[in-house]
Image (cartoon, rainbow, N blue to C red; front, top):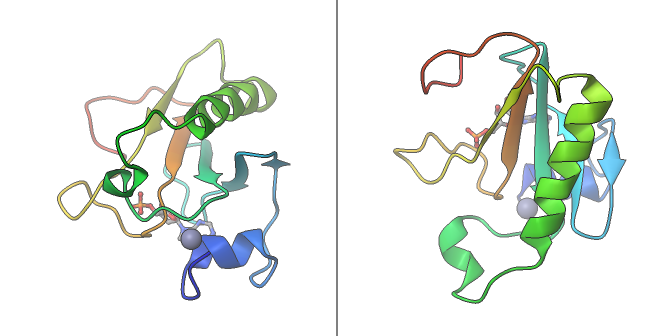
Length: 116
Ligand code: AMP
Ligand code: ZN
């Protein structure tokens, strides 16, 4: 938990947001500024600002994050049409919220490597 972190505050209920899914590893919300018909954020419960804070050991929570993304893609009806998972890492990666998270985008053909 980081005091000034928007995603930690959402998880703790300090900032109201619809939690679509929640489990031991992560929770899922809709992006407030959607760039595709489905644009979700899969957010680890534990506060890590960036991948570099994860250390060198494999992190079991990551299996849970990918499982949640897959389940949410099914629920959103984009599993068969396809979707994109993105982690923006650091300044050049375009990371704005410094609590590691994964974007799930789908519901329209996504071209190139950009988010839009
Ligand atoms: P990133 O650039 O990967 O750090 O993405 C941060 C994402 O969080 C952006 O796509 C924002 O639109 C989204 N975001 C910021 N605040 C909120 C919020 N309160 N609820 C939902 N999504 C948010
Ligand atoms: Zn946080």
